[in-house]
Length: 416
Length: 121
Image (cartoon, rainbow over all chains, first blue to last red; front, side, top):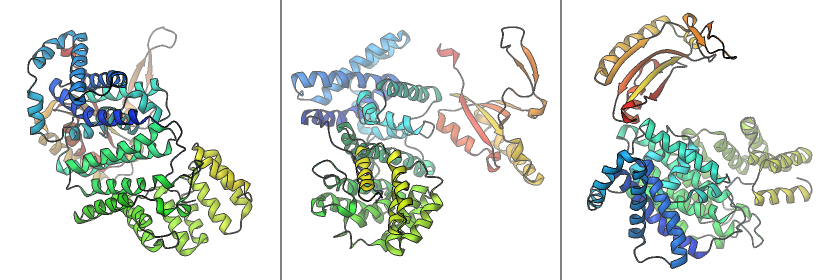
């Protein structure tokens, strides 16, 4: 089993209308939050006001249709909600009145400062916040997802997600987390934090079988595009965009007609999105020309090797193994070493690969793809009893229905 | 914004650091305070070791507070000192703290804690 991230069943398709509404909200929401935040000097109220406006907008637009100027509609609704929220905290009313009387300033400031969502994105992905909080905040404040949508995508109760957001916003205010693009000396690690959150959003999207999950992958690509537009000189941002675009080029072939998972080696390559692949190749060239290697570019290059191989048999495993060797210099995590071992299997056989897999087994004992990979290698080596035990362990550890189905069918077909 | 910086260390790991290395870092700390003097609301204090600590704890049954030997927590980490700084935001505080000389030694951490601003209440 190639541990390519997988997508779940696609039940619960969103209506085309809901998807269109989500895209309109996404285009406007983050900009409105950023403008309100700068205007009020209060992220919590700005973000809450826009969130409430989005909930009202979704309800109203579904009933009455999308207005001619949805951005203006949302912006006005958010300002009204912000004034209400400010009035509840009486000491801030003069500020609200002053702001209400001067509607031009924010637009002028927006022109001056480029894409205002970028500083907000850096604030939401600040290392002083937990990774879970970074994900939730980014999706709500920058992408304009509702708490309910985020909760559904991450399979947690809405109340839990709401609580997580409240705590994160409180920390931003109380601890003084700034919304600024970091200075050059700190930019590389801070950008890596931002790109990681975007990558994790994509992962959450394709591991989650519901429609909101698929939307999440689309949102992640949108975020990656936003970063590359605002910071075109950052090679890793292009690397991430290339990686996500390569992965999304296989979306249509990752499942068969019955919603069953199709492994990379069995996928119908004619169904891969050629346009997306050539776009991703272009992003990767842009990244390479900037001469700043990094882990996202290397992962993209590996995904590109698969995307550009005419068939499974023509996969350039030597190139992939070399790229994994380079990647380990940037990211020596056990998951990368597991993938390195899988590439090694194709070049030097299952014995060498199993030896390497076993080196990371202790650290990945709770990761189903470790056991599924061991099962594959043990089968190749003829140790069927151990392979069966490993497949059973993998089955017990995955919650993804499509992966469960695949593992069960392996166990039934000869027990390994 | 005002933040308290709590300088923490691990006494069990400090023992392994050679004395001349410790002296070197200690010397660098003077330079650090000098460099960041402008943002120091209060230089704070360096504390005697945890073995000198006495804690007064609330009584579990609501009686008289209890006096006990040792620091308030059983943690391996020890608060070795504190300062108060006044800087624009958390990133400014982090930038200063990253230069704290003792961070070159194992087991050292500096906790940054915002202070409650009573003027806004």
